[in-house]
Each structure stands twice: as structure tokens, then as C-alpha cells.
Length: 170
Image 1 (spheres, one colour):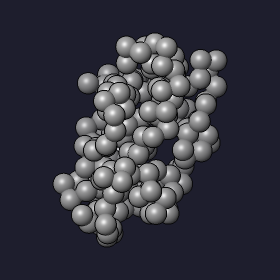
Image 2 (cartoon, rainbow, N blue to C red):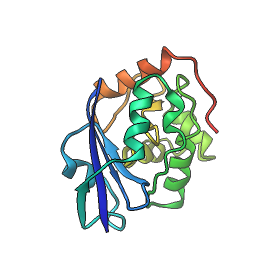
Image 3 (spheres, rainbow, N blue to C red):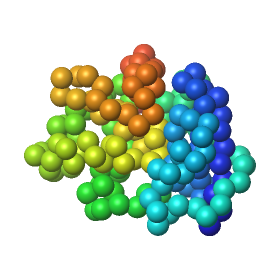
């Protein structure tokens, strides 16, 4: 499979989107290094080649950075994982901007309240960052925890969302 890659400039730095032939995001993140983004894709979904092109996801990211926090909500993504991972990634998409959850609350949302480490692992393995907003999950004490693309980016995203009126996520 050949994937489409597009890198755009954002206030948080270069943002790269890797999308399949149907426009679904396989991976995205704050880097200009296409290889770093491709490496986050599950081996079963990883493209054999990539080419530069335009993606609807990059346009949605621009709109998000322009103040439309809901622009990322309907971007199609595809991921490969366990049933719990897939449920977790779907649940992340329902977390409202400006209303982050703790890892414990996220685990409870998955009906696995004792699986806090598994919940954190779901966030860590999330390839289409921003479109599956794992940055909206924090440690129980409110500290940032981790983020594949750096804590400065995570803080910036959370600050951006906190200054806007939260919108309901379907």
C-alpha cells in the first residue's frame, strides 16, 4: 500500500499526517520526520511506500489550530490493536476538549477501573495523535504524564482547548 504524507506548520511545530489510499489517518504527530510517523503505525497497516500529497486530515488540523476544536472530530482513522485498545481509542474520541480525564477515569470509562496502566498504554500506542486525542488524559494528580510528541506539545494542546468553549463530541 502507498500512503499519502503531508506535513504542515502549526504553532506547535511541524505536524505530519500519514493517510491510507482512502484518506484515513494511519499516524500523525508533531514531527517533520516522516519515518518517525510511519514507525508508529502497526506493522499490519504500515505502508510499503509513501508519497507527498494533500490530506483532508491536514486541513482539519489547520482548522483546529485556527480555533475550530471540533474540526478533528470526524477525521477517519484506522488502527490495529487488541479489543481493549480499539475500545480505548474510540473512547478517547469522546473526551470533550477542555475536559481532560485522569488515567484512572479513562480506565473506568473502559469498564476496567483497575487497568490504569493498560489505559496509559492505550494512550502511548495511539498512532493518529490529535485525531484520537490521547493528550486529553492526565495523571491523577493533574500532571501531564507522558506524550509521544513531547510534554510541551501536550501542554500547548491542553491550554488551547482550555481557552475555548468546550464543544460536545459525538
